[in-house]
Length: 192
Image (cartoon, rainbow, N blue to C red; front, side, top):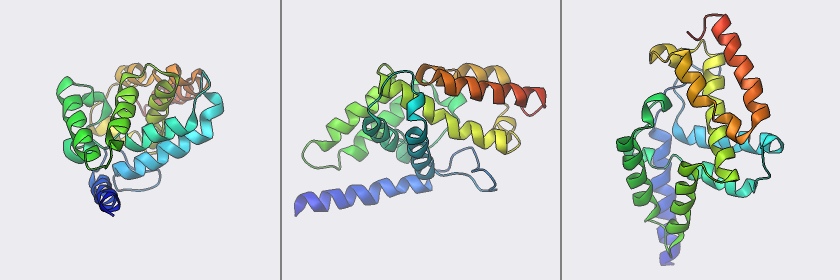
């Protein structure tokens, strides 16, 4: 019974991810996306594009990575990706992930924290694919939403292309299509 109680506490704690607002708006909506919605969206996206991964991937492992990859935002908050790749932000996220996963019983949190670290390192086929897919929905939000987050945060096209080129590390075919869409955004003045 104690294990069930601990699992219930974890379930309540991770629900706080619904209150973490991101910098992009879902397509067709005026409100900000929350991090829980993002986690669901990237999981479904990963499932749909798995045959376009550069290497064979264990999709269950990818989905588990994507479900936990933003848990640290409960404590650290969300920062736009173009400003979040700092040692301080990564340390705050790691501490948050460790705190949340420590609620789990019987060492379950250790296994999940190792999975989070694998995602962050981006050195395995699964983590490269997961990191690639993690970039897709925010790009689509901007491409379909007037470049709102790029404009509001003064993100230049060079940063958008440089950071998002990692999509090609997980799926060259997907990056080719996304890159064309980004070039179209530049040509139309959506991305400067």
